[in-house]
Image 1 (tube, rainbow, N blue to C red):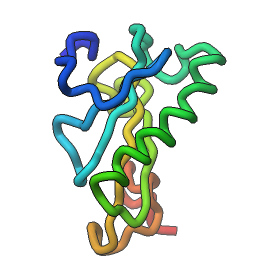
Image 2 (image 1 turned 180 degrees about the vertical axis):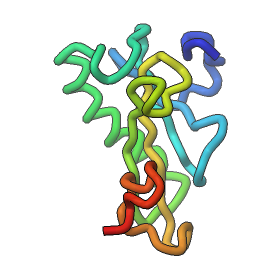
Image 3 (image 1 turned 180 degrees about the horizontal axis):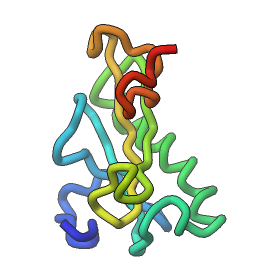
Length: 121
């Protein structure tokens, strides 16, 4: 997939001025959602100031949508910016990943675990 502009309309949970929200097609946990820019922007650093400000509001909306259906104990918020950072679809999207007690043996370090051995400190 090159971008998210061809997402089926029935997959969209919410659509705002700058972003829309869907459930991730390959979720790492129940409720894993994506916040995607309405316009083709490569990554977070390509967003305008207004879009970046609006993103915060959409993260809260996505959280509320998740909590209407699931009961997570925490969240990870993530954005992959660039191929080296793991980005595979070069259309801005923010992952909101619900976390559940016991979903990992030791969650300490959180996003630091994206590089092996760096979550231990």
